Structures are given as C-alpha cells and as structure tokens.
Image: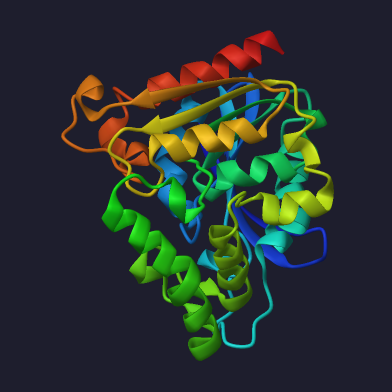
Amino acid sequence: MSTTQTLDLRSRDGHPLAANFFAPAGAPRAAVLIAGAMGVPRRFYAAFASDLADHGLAALTLDYRGFGDSAPRHLRGYSASISDWIDHDLPAALDALAERAPDAPLLWLGHSVGGQLFGFMDTSRLQGALLVASQSGHWALWDKPEWRRRMWTLGHVLLPACALALGRFPGRLLGGDDLPAGVARQWAAWIRDPEYLGHLARRRDWADFARYQGPLQVVSIADDDYAPPRAGAALLGYFQQARGERVTVTPAEVGAERIGHFDGFRSRHREQLWPQWRNWLLARAAEA
C-alpha cells in the first residue's frame, strides 16, 4: 500500500510551503513532481498522485505561495509573483522530492501553468516532462471568438484591475483559489505579450526552453476552452531541442462526454485516462 505524508517545506528564500509526498510500497521506479494549475490547490491532485504511488511512482504535490495552504490569511499587501514560484518554490519542491527518493529518476508532470513553468527549471536533473492542458496563453491563440475576447479581457482588464482595486484576483472567476496581486499582474503581462512566456524568458536567455533535450509530451484536450490545441502546439514550439511530441485527447476516446481543462485529474478518469499518463511516465523511468 502506498502512503501519504504531509510536509512543511521551506522555499529557497525561506517561505513556508504546504506539500504532500506520496510514497509507493517499495522502492520508487521514479519520482514525479506534480506542478499544478493557476490557483488550483494541491488537494485537487491527491487522488491522481496516490494512483501514481500505487503503481510504483513516488509523487509530490505542493501549493505555490499565495494560495491553498501556502497563503496568508489576507492577500492584500502580500508580496508574491510567478517568478517566486519559478525561482524559489518549485526548485525547493524538486529538492524535497529528490531527498525522499534519492535513487529514483526525477520526472515533471505539469498541469496548465505547471507545464509552462517547466522550461524555467534546471532541467538537467529531470528525465522527462508530461505537460497536460498546458499552453502558450497569448489571447490571440484562441480560435473561438468568445474565448479570444474573454482572454483579451482577462489580460487587459480583469487581472490588472482586480490586482489594483482588491489587492488580489478572485479565483472563483476561473474556478480556483484567489491569486495574489503580484501573480495577477505578471500573468496579465504574459497574456498581453505575443510570446507569452517570452515576457520573462527573453530576459533569461530563454532559460531551459532552449536547452532541454529530453523527452517531452504536451497533451491537449480537444474540448479544453482554457488550453486549445493551437495554444498547446505554441507551447511545444518554445522547446527548441526537446524530443517533443504533442497528442490530443478527445472525450469520446476515453468514454466521456466532457473532459475540459480540469476533469482529466478527477477520479472518474482513473480507468481510461490516467493509465495513458502513468504509462508515459513509467516508460521514461524505464529509459532512465
């Protein structure tokens, strides 16, 4: 039987972070960092992480600073940014995972923004990355006119206005937890930039987007309005040297009426969809 441990981590700059470690019964075949979506707390991924552990893959989930159990009581006046997640929170989570599974190859599973941020990591210690419902988020990449307008409004109006007026962005508007003002402002700037992640990556010489050479799969969900396939293809294009591939999953092929941006990680897809992702990770573990 796999086990679950609650962790109190410290980011690389000393910020407290809430996390969970899911340990398989025996020696792990690999260790997977599950980097979640914008404002989606780690508890959302618990069933999926437990399933990975039941099949021999250690897993770690975390709440980035500013939401979930890594948030202060009040967000107004609280300083946090996506750059903090990149530079301090996610590297500390990788450190904690490597410490708890020292002989296992490290893998990355990113959902939405958790997939986008992979290219900012030190990827030299990672043996593969599976990016689910991840995308380049420039508003013009949305084909449906109503969603193109919605994303334009999010980046140009809602995120910056809420950050200024409320000191936070109300997460219920997107189905997650509230976001700190600094996160909202930085995300808005990305949405307005035609290169999206390039807003930060250009200042970092394109970071490991330009250097990562390992296996990479970008999974688009056909009915995902938050990450349409064209936006997923744009994200894959940032990884210039990766052994990359992109697949599109339709609800029909897994016997579902709808998957969308979030449902792939819900337990209703345990039998049809989760094995596809789990087997990809296990294959990378075998290669390593």
